[in-house]
Amino acid sequence: MNQNKIKQSVTRGHIYEKRAEKYLTDNGYLILEKNWQAGHKEIDLIAEKDNTIVFIEVKGSATEKFGHPAEKVDRRKRENLINAAEQYIIDKNLHDRNFRFDLITFLDNRLEYYPDAFQRE
Image 1 (cartoon, rainbow, N blue to C red):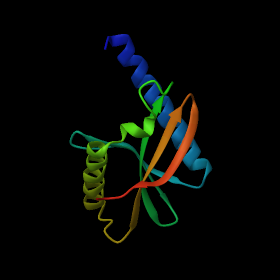
Image 2: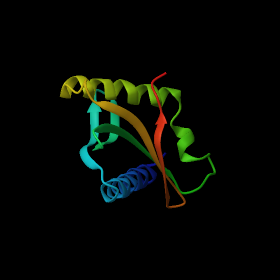
Image 3: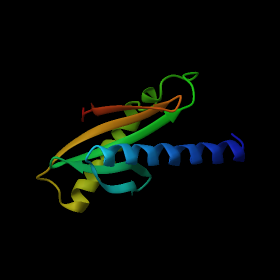
Image 4: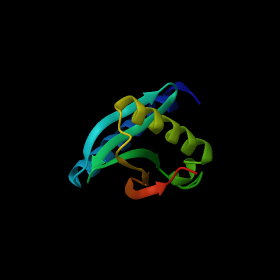
């Protein structure tokens, strides 16, 4: 992938994350973290609503040429998100809280929200 394509992809990713953040705050979520990292693993957004900590992955694509963006959250990606979330829980001492993993996708610029998209296997 050439440098221009990479820059466009990163910029588009930031735009998707900003739009996801706005959607969440408009719907009563409190954003706790953005792009939180545990080593090489990253959680796009961490939010709280109704005493539940929500770990949110944001994926987007202009077309379905390579499949729906939700399909990019494969088993390996889910495992990385779960591992990062476990580290966040330890770091913030949040063992007594409720948690879930949500997914927000953008396809052809349309937001789709999947609460409780997956669980620890």
